[in-house]
Figure 1: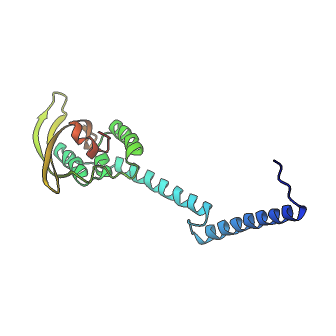
Figure 2: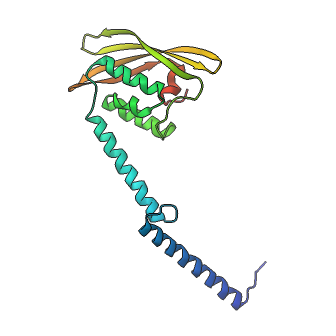
Figure 3: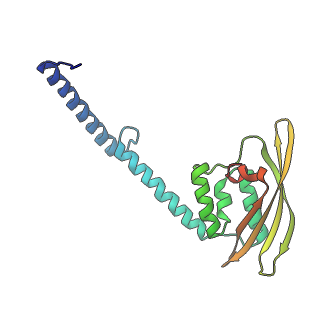
Length: 187
C-alpha cells in the first residue's frame, strides 16, 4: 500500500522536522554554555569525563597510600565489608588483586557498594595470625551477620598480606562462599 501525500503535507512535515532539529541544536548549545547536563548532550559528556578523570586520580592516589601493619590492612578490609564500601576493601589490596577486584566491581557493583541489605555484617574479629617463611602474614577473620530477627550466622576469611614498599597489602583472599556478596562478588 502506497501512502500518497500532497506537496503541501510534505512541505509541512519537512518544516516541522527542520524546526525540531533547530530547537534541539539551540537547546543543546544553551545547555552546554549554561552547564545544564540535563538538556545538553555535550554538557552531559563533559560531566561524565569530569567524573572519569576524578575517579582515575583517586585510584592513582590510593595506590600511593597504605597501612603500616598487617593487622591494619585486615581491619580496613573488614571495615569495608561491614560498611559495604568497596573502596575501603580496594584500598588495602596489592596491585594484581586490585586489577581483579576492579573487574568484579565493574561487572557486579559499579557504584562500589558491596554487600546485601539483609543479613548485614554486625561485627568481625581477628581469630588467628601466622607468619609464613617468606615474611607474609596470614590473618584469619570471623564475621558475624544478623537480620531484623536476630543472628544469621558467621563467616570466615583468611587474608594473605605482604609487605609492598613501606606498606602492607592484601595479596590473596580466601573466604567462605557466604561471605562473597559482602566482597562484591555474586554468591
